[in-house]
Amino acid sequence: MKILALDSSGLVASAAVVENDITIAEYTINYKKTHSQTLLPMLDELRRMTELDLHSVDAIAVAAGPGSFTGLRIGSATAKGLGLALDIPIIPVPTVDALAYNLYGSDKLICPIMDARRNQVYTGVYVFRKGAAVDAGYDMTVVEKQCVADISWIVGQINELGADTEVLFLGDGVSVYRDKIAELIQVKYSFAPACCNRQRASCVAVLGAVLYQQGEIETAAAHKPEYLRPSQAERERAEKKETGICQ
Image (cartoon, rainbow, N blue to C red; front, side, top):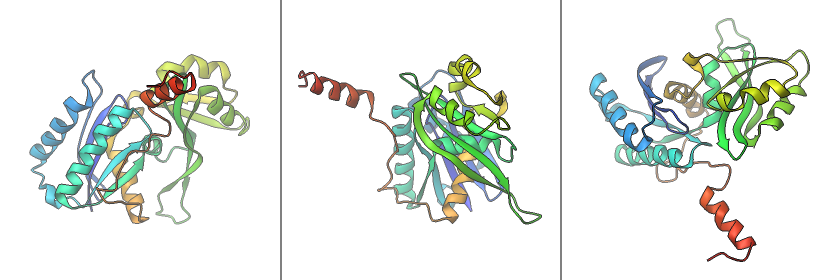
């Protein structure tokens, strides 16, 4: 099975082609430019360098949210356009789940944190458990489903898991909330290194393949991002309405 994967949910833009258990190509960039400037050129470069026939792609996996509102819209619009043109399904992959997949096989609790602004993070808590068979891989168990929350709340949830817990944090929220985590955390903790602490489209593809086997797919026409909270414009409109100045 060949999957084209996209992730533009945060500061990182990433695209990958994964076939079965092989990452054929991956292009990831985290440098200033907006996703509208980077994503399509990245896809075109992947296609050119791997001589990819887009009609050989079976499905498109996309980080479906939460995340940056603009970034999610760009990723979803790109996935929808390709899906409609190629007549293939879209696999909507939860953004935070895919970020946790960077640390596949870790024996620690995994807590991705993405900066959601307004003193909040997009986060969740995960653990990988080995299958019973000798040659079995790891299954990712969701301890706390992806959500938007105050950093103190998610650290509190981790603290309640007990003193024997050891947690590994990753994501762009680490640089923002590192000191706050150190202040609040009551269990062993560490931060993932640069090689695996940001979004990667190959992880979206691999988790997408798992979801595909579970039937978690949708048509390109039906696909839309999962924002988890109202956009800034929607919040401002609601605030104006509450104060009686909504136009």
